[in-house]
Image (cartoon, rainbow, N blue to C red; front, top):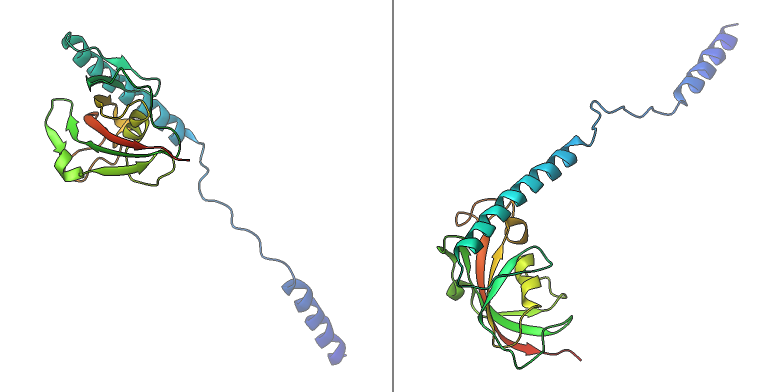
Length: 182
C-alpha cells in the first residue's frame, strides 16, 4: 500500500513537472502613437524651417535661388555653362565645403573640413544627406551655396557644442574634380 502511494505521488509529480513554462505577458501595450506624434512634430519643424528659408530667399532679390527636388534650395556662386558632366554613381569627387547657420555665422569652416574625397552614392563617409545630393547637381569647378532644412543637415543630433538640434544650415560647396568610374 505504501509502495502504491509512493508511485502515485511520484507519477503525479512527474506529470505536473512536465508542463511547459508560460510566456510572460507584457506589462504595457504600445499603441503606436509615438511614431504618429513624431511624424506630426517633424512636419511642424519642417514647415517652420521652410518658412524661415523662404523669407531669406524673399529678402535676397539679387540672387536666383533654385528649389531642388530633394527638399533644399541653392544658388550658384560660380557656374560652368560649357560642360554638362555631373557626378554619377561610382564617380570619385573632390570638394571643399563649410557649414554656416542661416545668419552666415561659420559653424564648421572649410579649413576644418579640408579637402574631401567622396565616391558618389557608394561611400559610407559621414556627409549630411543634403551635401551628398547637392554634389550630384554640380559640375567640376562650380561653387554652389545650399540652404538645407535640418532634416537634410544635422537634424536631431546637431554638431556637439557647435550646432543645436533641428537647426537649418547653409553650406558653400566647391567641386574641384570628378574622376569618372569605369
